[in-house]
Image (cartoon, rainbow, N blue to C red; front, side):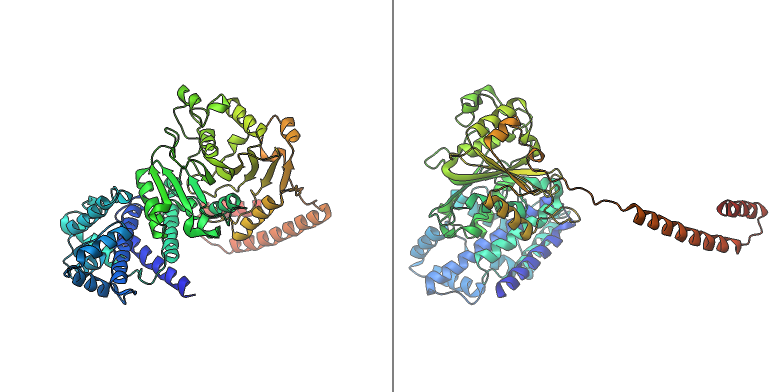
Length: 532
């Protein structure tokens, strides 16, 4: 209960920080400022707590106590040794005057200097490759904060003071990480179409992860890969279901630099050790990655940009990811290029889940050839149709395709989950009950009338390898038969009620008087018409 309250308090404080910025810029812009400054507070507070622990082998009562102890330790002969130990543990060092605690005090005393905050950002970025260019998107001198130095500085100062109310000293990684996730979700809701760049709705993330981790929950050193990772939320979901979450290895790539930075912050805020996160800023299709020692993973999760354009250059036919298929995904629809990239990086014992538009299930030409090859190889394990309007960036219905690299059978399970949702104001939502129902159908892997169909390879051949879900799952429900006698009685009742209302209306019209003879004549004609 205390953890829930702490999370609620954290969310309240962080969201009130958003209120300071929302009148000055849209959500897609201020999310970078807010989340970046929250992250710096996390780095600073974590650093002071670690310093105090190294000095006294206990947790400080307050961040001010930790800062005082830090200043005192720096004046002693053993300071260099302490700093080396801190640097080794945290991968960064923050000077006492550049701690968030100092910035918050200065903001309360009207002596905040944003040059110092910029210096603090620069120091973190230069401390370790892990943090390189991490605060690039935070322009502390932007006109968006106001006109003139004073207004801009005052806005940042107000934000610093508000975020300082967040008690990170007494919040564990899960509480802080989940509050951060909540913020990202709220930004996605406000941002609308641009949200597709950085956020996958939690319901879809849960289905993905539960499917991909099934049978691998207890695996030591579980590896998870997302080549289109956005804010990293999809990757981090593995922690919810793994028996040994501390040793999960996370691999992710993201094209958008600001989103890549968001993912890096998200990893640290969830307490992921630096050695367990391998993230890269780059184009997934343009150049293959990872290509070092670790290239295949236990779980591959993907929510790529739908029907994106890519070069589809002839040279890609020599690329190991695509060469076996003889054709390339079309230039205007990179869906299968993303799918094949993920499958290439999947371990033989692993599971991949990717969400794509329904067109990939039935489009012909090159996509049809790739699909047939995948089906003949037994790679497609299941197809799950999701409700429409689940995502912030599109209202179209989507589907999850589950893939395996090597298995004995070539059957495919089809699940129609298109009606498993609650309608929301902006987006439809899948509840935990809906999610459990989908997972139950997936786990049972049997035909269930109007919900699921286990198609044999012969079924797939008969349908020319078209995977359109209605070909396999008949979800049509006959409408209830209409009783004509009851309908006729209802119509008579309605006519009677109309007649009564009309008589009352006409009686009220008769009571109207006016000195305008022309108007009264028109009124009389209208009443005669009503009376038939």
